[in-house]
Image (cartoon, rainbow, N blue to C red; front, side, top):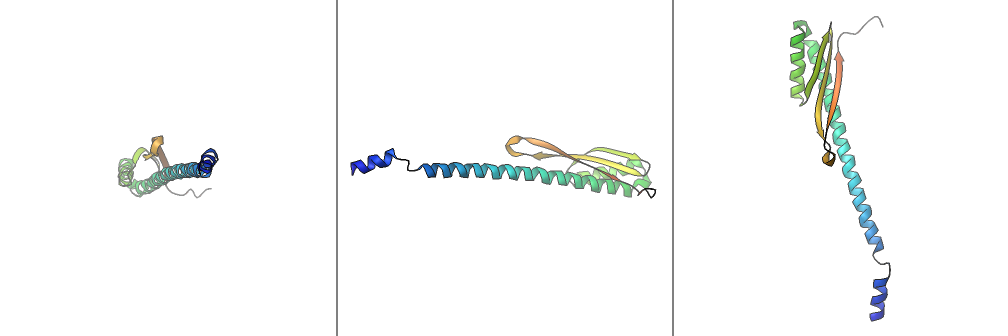
Length: 125
């Protein structure tokens, strides 16, 4: 009995278990990184949606003036949980740029942005 115990301790028994544990840890880490990338992608889409809605909202009140249009864009951005970085009015076009922070887990906080333009369609093109 003593000889079989010594042979078992000296062999490679348990190597597959250690490999399986390492592979599982790597798979969990990869899943977490993919999940964090997904969070940033969703934040980027949210920022773009806020820019789109802000530009449309600003264009809808542009007849009241550029200040009213940019105020409306700022309100939409606030409702969407982002910061308005820029609002520019040129004739009947409104350009809105927004930004938001997205937590990237252990990699820190990233800033995502979106920009949109709203105005009349140019019939000459």
